Length: 516
Image (cartoon, rainbow, N blue to C red; front, side, top):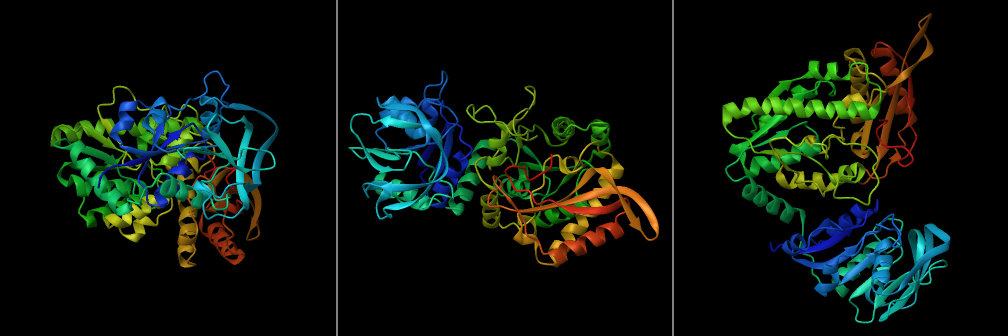
């Protein structure tokens, strides 16, 4: 497949990943690039159109991101979204000013000209706004094609039909006809035909991995989760004789997880290098309560263990040049790595950024711009079994971030047993595949209870289950009360040290999915 890309230029919006997602859903190959990416790297991608993302900046900020000059030189069609619209107007000679009224949330859009991106769409529909600046004067050669109550230039286009801009976010589900607007831009304005599918992606990625790795060797931290499993399958198909999956037992895994993972992947034909490093991880976490510090220590220890084991493997197999990771796009967004200078950091991910300079490996991240559901689709294309593909997401630091406060073997055992009951019952009740993620959390509080005729003062377990499309937002799962009652009874009766179970009904945002 000829590699031609719709280029999404990232100005730091938390919605940027959704633009990429929608474009791919429409069947077009797309890549995300930072706004200051070198032109030579863009040329290699063979761009066919540009989409300019939103972002938190004002065009009048001292260091506000700019639309690269190559966008204008290319003569290719471009669509500016929110900040992308404002940057387009500002750089072409129009005027953007602070609005007297901010516009956040739903707004009614009135289409003035049903052309281009609005071809075939209703004259009025609801869109999602998120801005405090607005366009006050159009550049020469532009016209207004839609307005809202607070935005007289809610959508614009150049007279030559090359540039379009919208003040709202067509990529979010809250915008009616959002997908149709993007399709119109790609098919009717840019004149593109759908040319991308997960099958194409799988084939291209396997060939790229073969070409990059060549005669080298690559290691991977295989956790058994969907992300690392799919990466393992890609490498197994691309370079089966030069791929060494390493399973590190941190002691922070779910109950019986190590045994299950090894059995599953050896059945596929992979030979797993197993490492029991639990003692090292528990020593590193002793007395540590701060969640960020726990993540950092686990991440550093994981790297240390990897380095140590890779040196052993080097003696056995020869030079190992690459380290593959199952990093996904939401990880990149939340970590604010260097390529996203305009974004906002939410939490640290131990497999994103932060690797030591002397790390003797080149990093390979084949899933870096995919979302969880896309990863599952890729896994199906590669032939991974459903019981692996349908596993709920599991954090890199493991149960350490589901134990609030200090972590030790006793607390891990309690949580493992409670979590196992929760997952068992979700599967029995045929609820497991209906939620995005479900798990138990061990709280740092005790409560009074009565068990038999005796007063108890023991630990509290919180149950968490959410529904989501991509993990960027999530709603708490409305599980049946009878189910929750049954699970709570089992946990209290079967898990020593627990006398109370609560259920988390907080959505994301304002909460994160994980508690730490």
